Length: 177
Image 1 (cartoon, helix red, strand yellow):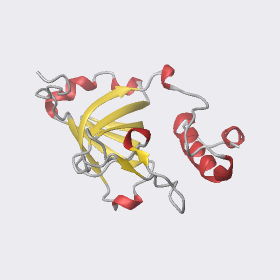
Image 2 (cartoon, one colour; image 1 turned 135 degrees about the horizontal axis):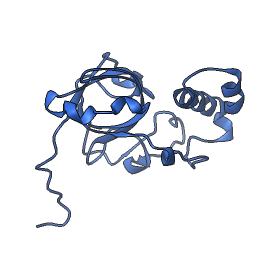
Image 3 (spheres, one colour; image 1 turned 45 degrees about the vertical axis):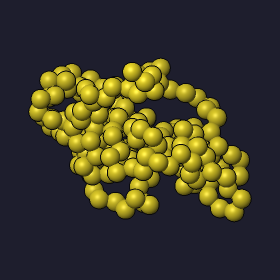
C-alpha cells in the first residue's frame, strides 16, 4: 500500500448542520446553528449536557481541494502575500476537514443548538469532542495579531471571551482591553 494513502473506508458523517444560508463571503467566526446527530448515533450523546463547549469536526464537501495557497480574508490588500492553506483556516485544503469550537445553547433529543459554528447549511459532521481545560493556549503567535490591527484583535478577543465567560460584564471588557 502507498504510505501516503490513508484508508478512509470507515469515515462517515454522524450528523448534519442546519444553519441559516449565508453567502460564502459573509461567513465569519461562527453563527448559531443546529447540529442534527443521526439517530443511530444518538446514544453517543449520553451525558453530553455536562459540557458547555465542544469541538466540531466537519467535512467541507463544497470546498476546493486543489488550492494549496490563498490569501487570508483579513490580511488582503496591496503587498499581501499568499499563505499556504496549512497556515490558514481556509476551507480550501487537500482534506477539507474543519475544526470549530462551539458553545452548546441547548439540546433537544438528537438536535444540538450551538453558537460559534462557521459552517454552511447541510455540511456533514464527522465528529464532536468536548472542550477540555488543557485546550487553552494563551498568547499564541498568529499573523493577524499585530499592533496596527488592534481593533480587529480586540473584536476577535471580545467574541471569544464572551463565548468562554458566558456573559458580558465590566470585568470581561477590562480583560479584553
